[in-house]
Image 1: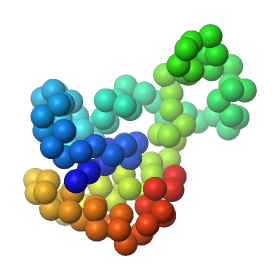
Image 2 (image 1 turned 90 degrees about the vertical axis):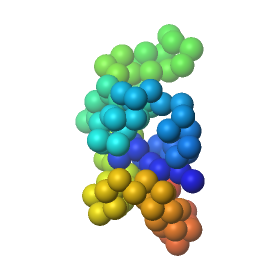
Image 3 (image 1 turned 135 degrees about the vertical axis):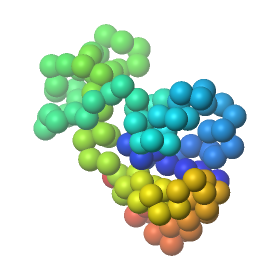
Image 4 (image 1 turned 120 degrees about the vertical axis):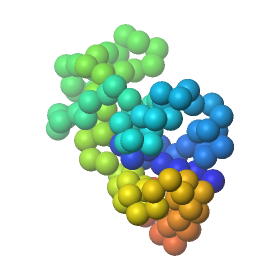
Length: 115
């Protein structure tokens, strides 16, 4: 079962989170500071498309923002907000959290994944 980053909404397998994350990454993940995919990045507040942004670096093989910002962090997706709320209610019950999130995904369908 998956749990979602409270910052960017990226899905992470609960068992993989326990086995593959370092202790510091797990702590940051559960405290809402971000996952390995978004930790250290700042929300992007620009209105133009990435390709039109002066901070966009098209010379890299993997196209990235030179300012290390992320449009995905500009507004947290619903699944990350739901994860934060459920974790506040359930506390350390990570199995219950994963089960509730799985139920929410089943009930909401595609709306659960919309940004």
